[in-house]
Image (cartoon, rainbow, N blue to C red; front, side, top):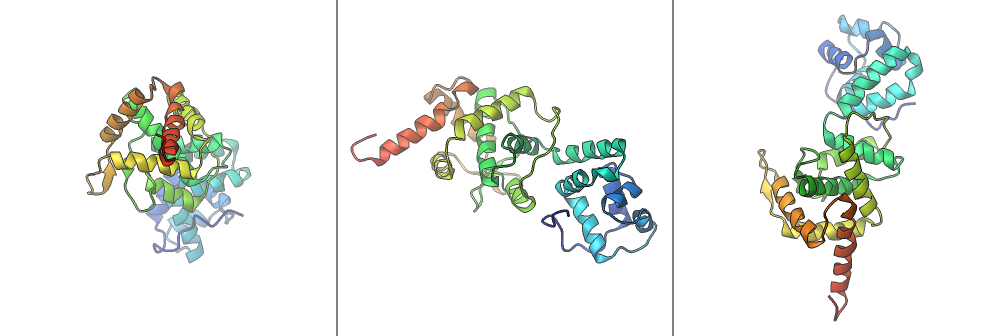
Length: 268
């Protein structure tokens, strides 16, 4: 049984244009899609020709359209319903949809490295430090999303909420979504920070936040700009003698040691 954690509950009856969008988006035929859903072979054909789907079927189709993660889970669990060629074609299409932005590619690389035994907040921390050290060491962003200021204290809130809603699961990623340099950077960040728990991350990010300037994006939402992050972490790299990714561990190790020393009277 496919998890219902993705399922939408509103939005009205799905239209034939929306069904056509599903077929194009995931490169799947009408009959194969019906088979994946466990429906009669002609069900999708009838809907395309004007039959009105039941509320249950409409919700299922709207969920597929809105959530590539849901479709991926469905596809992997019911792949035996398709020919090998049809399965591979649709799998490649849904992966391209999920990995449409680099932040998702980085996230699922992290999830796969950890065999899905990782929580959404920890993924946020690793993404944040991957981004800032990419800016500081390589003078380029890893992904385009800005660090948002929000009540949940999660830098990439849209991704965070999506992963909380959909859950954490592994994807069979290929080698096309991240460069070797990007993978090496993510690996180095995980090696440097995985020794620490949520309290340490919150401490580090609170100290950083107090020194970073808040600005606004084009939608007037509060963010910390990439330029501001780059300048701050370039100074961090100079201060802690971080010359490459192998030195990244110096930052959490030394910065947290300094913080702990400052809490003890007569030290620091």
